[in-house]
Amino acid sequence: MNITMKNDLAVNGGTKTVTKSFTWPVFDESDVQAVTQVAQSGQWGNPDCGGLVEKFEKEFATYCGSKYAIACVNGSVSLRLALIASGVRPGDEVIVPPYSFIATASTVIEANCVPVFVDIEPDTYNLDPSKIEAAITSRTRAIIPVHFAGQACDMDRIMEIAKKHNLFVVEDAAHGHGGEYKGKKLGSIGHAGSFSFQSSKNLNSGEGGLVITNDETLYNLMNSLRNVGRVKGGQWYEHHYAGCNYRITQFQAALLSRQLTRLEAQTKLRDENGKYLNTLLEPIEGITPLTRGHGETLHTYHLYIFKYDKTKFNGLPKKEFSEMLAAEGVPSFMGYPKPIYEQPLFQKKNFMCYAIPDYVDYSDVHCPVAEHACYEEAIWILQHAMLGTKEDMNQFVEAIKKIKRAV
Ligand SMILES: Cc1ncc(COP(=O)(O)O)c(C=O)c1O
Image (cartoon, rainbow, N blue to C red; front, side):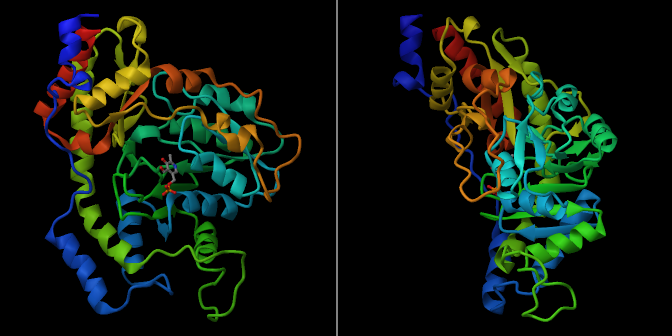
């Protein structure tokens, strides 16, 4: 460890490498006007799922090249709506990756089903298609591939396996708005595609979610489920399914329509910056960007992820490296502390009223790639920083090099 250089690190009181502050969300007077107009209209709610909500649903479905969209309160409920509408039954198994936000698996529990964890690929951190078939049993009904960080999963292989075993595929595209796989928008390839509009997401209305599909029956069922079981043409107090009020407000829809007009340009900018960062980081020993070239034609970089190897940083643990990088002013984070199956929900079987069979036990589950990503390897740069300039990207790399020189 070089003492002078160590003292220069921002974490030790030295000057930050990156002084610019990166803001999110991006908005202007037109967003403010759109929300103001809703306030002035007095039509704040959305009892019929029409108005601005229906307008946004049509815009988003068209943008994704899908027939139908159902907006709902968040990207967890959207996953659950798709699962429930797919016809799963209590105790059915659903294949999920362990390196994701908890909702990818907890919504499976909330659908009375059993999440089965299949490890991720070491070079993309996406569900590893080569490991899926070994996890399929007579109870398997669905797969939830997560386009993690906005990088497309290997959808050709996943859809092929799903077809062979008659499985329902819900793409978890919570990170994937605007991203593409072989020219197709993420979310539009499986039987349903789920999105989140929570405040950190690349398309954001504070909270919100949405499911797209081309299947009319699925659409009608999800539409009913998000609106307390009402059906088209039915009476107000006529309820056909065990749904709930999962509707979004006109305020959210107005914002989303405005935000959607910026999405394509923002996604292309992040994609360009991501490719540029890859070229800058690849030569640095101990830093390996995740691999592209698995079919993603547009990467959303909801997160820019690189793999950190402490052995090339004088044994500096990932957590400390991550804190140093953030202190240097790079909007970055060490990511998930553990794979989903290690959360108390699974280890303590805190399944409460959900109909999870007694034999289900996660104490022996191990997905070594996901574990390595959590404990040793993954560093995330956040999406709003990926909207910066090339000079900003150069500075992120400078910050990494500064740490490397100091340790
Ligand atoms: C991969 C993934 N799936 C689902 C969700 C759930 O979205 P929400 O927070 O809108 O419920 C998130 C949210 O962070 C996510 O990252």
